[in-house]
Length: 328
Ligand code: G3H
Ligand code: 13P
Ligand code: ZN
Image: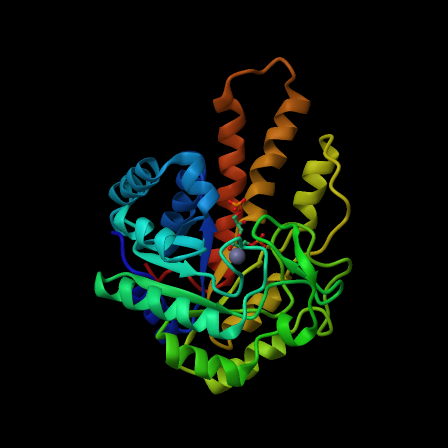
């Protein structure tokens, strides 16, 4: 059944687990992710970016997720707008059946320019009031996602935003978080701790200087009842980099967020864990492998089936490691 983010994360907090939020754009991703959820009996968040909505279309996305729910009646599914950029985006998502929206007011509507605190509070509070009136949940974001190594803010597509930021903008301030949650009434709070979108998060295996998990612990101490969200949580595992590169890909060596760091976050209030890049790499790795091994093949299903299998395996692992398994 489709449920709200609030219902899902309240249960996660009560039982001390985290829920992966996987991005979807098409049927194969939806089938593979929900298959993993069903195999391990886990609830799941399926999220669609603005890009996903224009790629698949709102009607297609909604019907697809309704179909996934009908096919898997025991699995709680939340359909969430990822990185909403204004009130209109969030409200049109809700009109199309989304049970939850993110209002990302850490950036302006262009999703490139870092916004000031007052703008963020005002726009997030407005979305929360409107969404709550019709029974949908709201995720806000405080702190600009970006690299502590380069000082670059992270745009949604993994590219850099305008200008350089200092650590005070790239790390969520715990005192400000308390004020933000009480003034906006958001159901979940995305924080910034040094992660960024896309595959190229860190130039080395991250330590506490570039992945600031201690910030999450400080926020959780101040806001023990607030559901925290980690964006940019792909682990960019070596086996997927190798799968892609061994089959003719050219991804430079890179490092993501180690799963054990996410597990540490889950012990300190992280309830929603956003993952897109790992899912993309899992599918693309298999596409490349089939293209290399079977150059005579041209049936898309022969590419999609192994790609879905690879994605299901990845999702199963995250459900198991985040403690989501068994909680459907
Ligand atoms: O937050 C970023 C997600 O990976 C969505 O990316 O805007 O390319 O669909 P997208
Ligand atoms: P990744 O690029 O690390 O998968 O992050 C996805 C994300 O944060 C979507 O909002
Ligand atoms: Zn994100």
